[in-house]
Image (cartoon, rainbow, N blue to C red; front, top):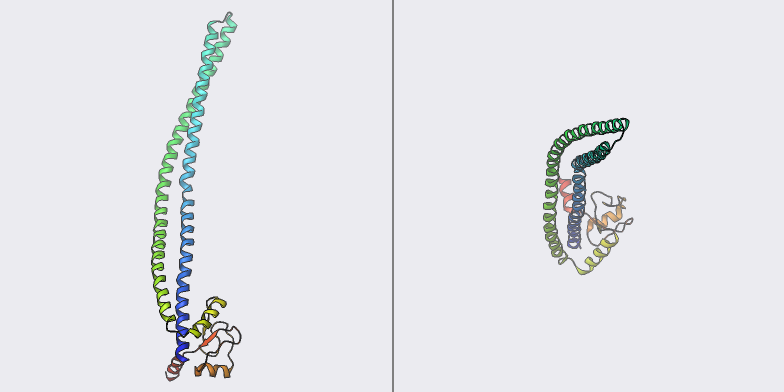
Length: 243
């Protein structure tokens, strides 16, 4: 029974190793998505300034449209001016034309302001793009490292699954059935290692008589509280006592 229990404990350790790798393989894609989201959110520093540039362009286009509309008004006023029949009417058209011409000058000044603003926004875009490229580079490196690790862990998992199969082949069929049943029922923890006089998993104190039976290694003993197989490395304990 001693050899059988040692194999079951070795199998449990192997399953623990596989579980750790599987957890890593589950966590890595989550971390990658998290990094990608953070990286893409940082892109807003560029997108926001590009939006400002688009707004600036639309505002200039609107101002240019106003100039065309005002010029059309002036054209009509001049046509009316040529048809004026009285001096008062003539002077009225002259005043309106001057007002519209002054309006064009004012709009042109606004266009110039918008052009200056556009140049400033372009400088801001270049600055933000440079900052984002540095940030993205750092994020992409982390993502690449995680991707590389993911591939490594997959290869490692395949290797450890083969190692598990090799260990299973050495375990008696009866013991393996008990182990597998407990493994499924107890969330992957079928064997509990006993260091002193407590169950290594549920931490329940083991009765002296039961502890004595575990030490004898003559039969399979389970924890009275959690039901897991109890295993104690007698050789290790003896070596500790001698030390």
